[in-house]
Image 1 (cartoon, helix red, strand yellow):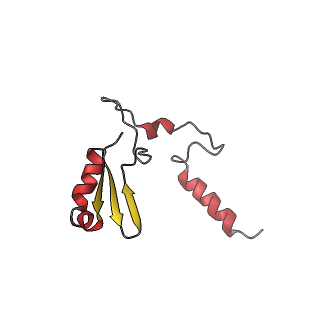
Image 2 (spheres, rainbow, N blue to C red):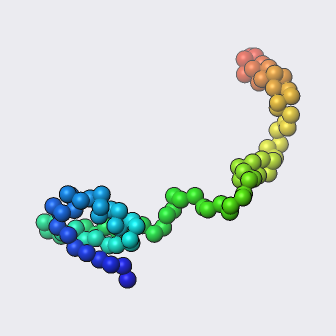
Length: 97
C-alpha cells in the first residue's frame, strides 16, 4: 500500500514542486483538501508514452529493419531513374487527353 498524506490547498500551492517530486520518486499519494472536496495526486504507473528499453550494445536501428519489408509494386529503382519518373508524371498531369 502506498503511503498517503493529506495536505491543505495552501500547503500544496506553496510546495507543489516538492509534493510532485515525492509523488513521482517515493510513490506517495497526496490528497489535497480543497473547499467542498479533495484532489488525489498519484503517480501514473502506465508509462504509456515511454519508449521501451533497448538492450545495452544494441547497434541496429529498428527503423532500418523496416526497410524493404513492404513491396509497393512500384519501381524499385527510383534513385536511378528519378528524372524519368518525374518527367512521366509531369507529362501525364499536364497533357490534355
